Length: 246
Image (tube, rainbow, N blue to C red; front, side):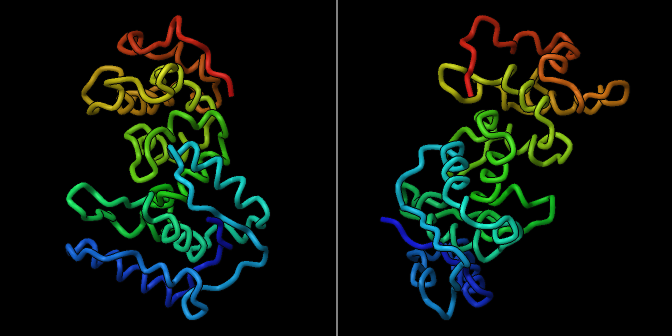
């Protein structure tokens, strides 16, 4: 079912925030969906833009969907619009905070649903983050945005938590070359282990930081970056696998 997108106002955001606190306190309650259309808690947007409740199979699909859905809005109506993204989170709450087997919801911190636009947390919002990553990298975001809507992978967290990494296409290409299982179209097994694991995503980030002392790593292509990596990464190279097409 499609619905016109609105934005929660300050009162609506506080109501949503209070609901998240109740969930963390162990109180089972349905999302306050009445806020979505109540003029006391939400406002119309300048353009009529619809969003649907269909199930979205991954964060990658989500990113593409949001870019298409919000295309009619001006950038200033999207960027740093806390009310818009809080409204979207409430509208899609069953997907960003699904009911677990025991019947509870685990929302995590507020910034997963009500965005904070400081760099530390901006990509942690479960909708705004995938939207921004997909808008910047399109098909090349497939590795970072693998997995379900309600959780972020270690690869996503390691790359998006560093502004110089998420802004660089070569880094994204190198990560795909190393860690993308092309058949599963998701991270290769073992690639998201702790930083001590040779060749893992956390080692990749730390090695890039070391290499940047002597090389212009963030101006290189993915292939050039891979060529500089030490031998511990050789086992991860996707030799012989099908080439991804974006």
